[in-house]
Image (cartoon, rainbow, N blue to C red; front, side):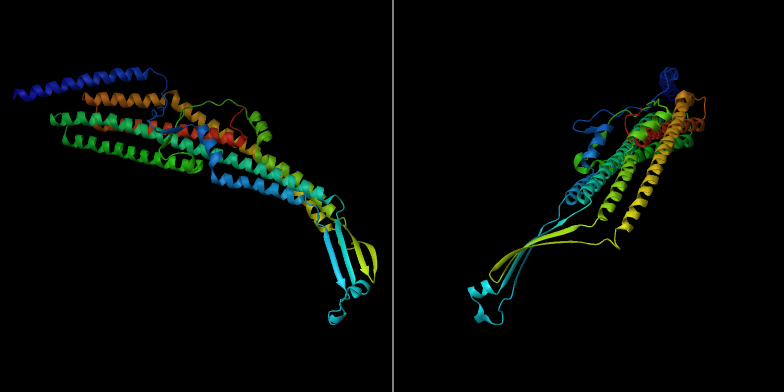
Length: 442
């Protein structure tokens, strides 16, 4: 009968030693500053790791949707070439009085004395500087195309940054899940020994084993989320720009932003590419109006001809111009005049949208910053300390199993919620960068 008691005493001594070591660690952690999410795991041999700046540059260079959009600039430049072309001259020629039905009359004397030959050249002279106005209108459209492509780049940069943050969150959540699972596995092992020694009931031991299933499930889900996030990010970067076994690198941590709303709005009004496109739209509308007025000017067609008839050679000059009685292009002139007003209103709407976007993003950043500060003010420490105290007390028999498991769940939920709040804050920073139109905030 003494042998079981001796083994139980030895087991109790081992548990006490482990609890004392854990208590020392808990005390050190309780006095340390607010913890931050773990850094990205170290680079594996052969594994490609990219930073956020690398990811954005890859997307700008290889994203096929953006590459397709950039061709609109080249198309518009080709239209400039077309707009700057002059009319082609027209070559005229005819032969009259040929003895087609009397072939026997064909002779050099007949062709010289009776047949008539005409050869002429005509050219359309454009009035009102139509070509210059066409070229200017085409150049203005090219400027709009450039600004629209720049706005596509702005949107793509935000998409890449958002997906990059999602990948970082998934990686941080996976690291947390693995830490929790490995830590709780030790509790399961100790619980197994206590169960064998008869220190805890079969029901308590089953509860501990079932709780381990939740940790294993969390790890599997986090691993899947990371794979999906990296796959979605690779689609934005362009599949050929990065290998399949790549990973993200860079700090997943709180980055304070100190900027005033007025400075951000002023910066946005100066840099937002969609607002610049709207402003260029007013310029393009004016150039179209000037082109419409130029098209109301009637062009002159001039023609010079050489005629040979009955051994006589003559020259002729012709000219024609339409009389602008009915059609003076007045409809198109009026339409383009209204289009100027439309473009001006669209510019004002775009300016208001820019200011509203910056304000919304700024307020979103402030709100997320407040949430982060709440976590960092002590709640993370409280959750970890509560978990450690409950674990220590349970292992020494001073707390119930349900209390320990509840503290474990609260700690896991708090840590995961903090990482999600941190990702939301980083996403708010990216939204502010997108709203301002630059990645360098004032």
